[in-house]
Length: 147
Ligand code: DQA
Image (cartoon, rainbow, N blue to C red; front, side, top):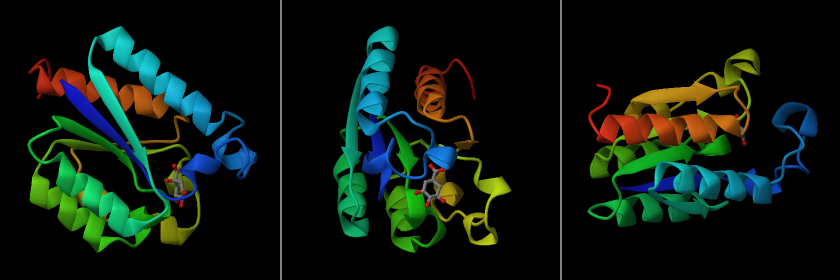
């Protein structure tokens, strides 16, 4: 079982960027949480973060045939990127969308998610814990423990 966690622009600035919205935990804390979750579930978790839309599209395409499930926080590209949506649709790998903040309670432009249209679940407003929940969900889904 191999899960890819994809993070979009400015997620590498966690702990520095708007701590009132995204919390005080750092990007290094997130990487640790991903490794701890992988160990707990005895699965492989690979992480990729980029500030560039095309790099995220490339990584989604690369996943085809190599990755069983994708956890994606496209960050600002959530609300703009048809290219990321199309890439997720192209590879057809089960995907879960994660947002650290509760995007529903924020500006109107954050209410639309293109990537979310290709995801089987969205977790928002649970902080970094949302990534753990998403990995657990995908692991159960891929092991046919939930449908
Ligand atoms: C975010 C929410 C987006 O609206 C924002 O642009 C981000 C992070 C979140 O995780 O809450 O960069 O995806």
